[in-house]
Image 1 (cartoon, rainbow, N blue to C red):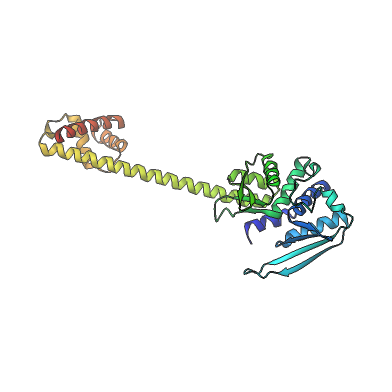
Image 2 (image 1 turned 90 degrees about the horizontal axis):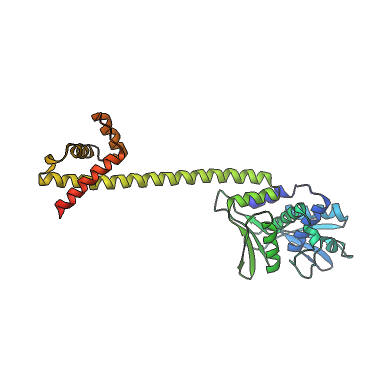
Length: 305
């Protein structure tokens, strides 16, 4: 079962108030419902079909029927068709939708307060929402919609909870999406998916820790490489000074640093300073080692010229 399916299975078990049920139903039927003689909903999710079935029976006491069909495509997924008798248009009117014009912005009473907005977003996610498994890929929550005005409405609804959603056009459709991990966590809180939130956060914390460890390791390796490269150049300078025969004429402080560099080629300047301080009982800092190395480098450059 996909992560999205797991979330939907969790969401359908949320008990809402009567107004919240209306908002959730309004979103679902606006997105994947239609009407000829009967209201019809077609979905590949048995959970969504059962959710709508139960909400309609609970609220409207209408006759409902679910038919199961096996698809003819390569994956042969089952399709669930829900049919509802609504000759008096009661459901359509109460939900503030219009089946003749799908995915229009619903009536304002459907999203009148924070709780009904949350319920509406639950319905949108159950109908057309998809969230990638954080274990397998980058963080990505999306809703694919047909109508630009409706897509903008969904984006604004999400952003009323500070979720920083974005909208792009894609193949005559519109995708509202969220890519920031923290905002996706906030969305799971908004729709009440507590179990999915804990799973998502566990994976996010693990990935963030792993990425931080990798960055630190890369940084440490880069510093090691830099130290070795600098050390090689310093040793090369010292060897040139020795070859020309002026090493013994150097100041004692320069000779000490030069000899310890040859003895400890892999040590950083800080480590070299600590070693010299310990073995000679003469305190020298990283800055002191650096300035003496700089003098040796300048002398080597003069010799080369």
